Length: 249
Image (cartoon, rainbow, N blue to C red; front, side, top):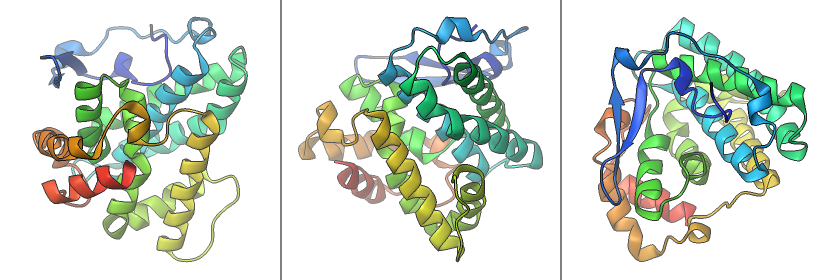
């Protein structure tokens, strides 16, 4: 029974375990699938705005990365990702602006569940890989860690994933974008950026305590997330991770 609309863990085989002072690791096993998942919006009505925003962006990242995953992407995961983003993109700001909006809260829960099912079939990638060091080293909530690097990873991936991003633009943007795949991808990234800004959560790594001298360690730590990086539509080197963190600083 989730109390946030974010991880979708009620329908996945993934659990994240804190393994040390500054490290987290994912455990993936079929035994982690629940026998029954109950989505009750009543349990999310008191969720603060910042937590609503961060967990909601986390759910959107699940769907975006599942849709663009280099491995195991399939029609089922695509359908679930699209359905997730239809719900999440239309209801994130209403849920943030009025935490008692039951209809928006219900839509967010359903969207997060669909996103969880999507990435259970087609795994997440570099956004999550780069988010883990932020959460582990600086004790930043996972959803916020994802939000801080999302648009920067998408810009990095654009050369390899613009066709898929352009398809998602048709799902997420309130007004259909026109032009090339690259133009529609740019419109999508700018729209997601604007959504995150409107939620009011931090937008830069500096705001959560990251300094330029920290980036080398973060990039090195991100490279250990091989389970995730292999799914990225564009190969990520340590130098690439350093550049992405620098852009997010």
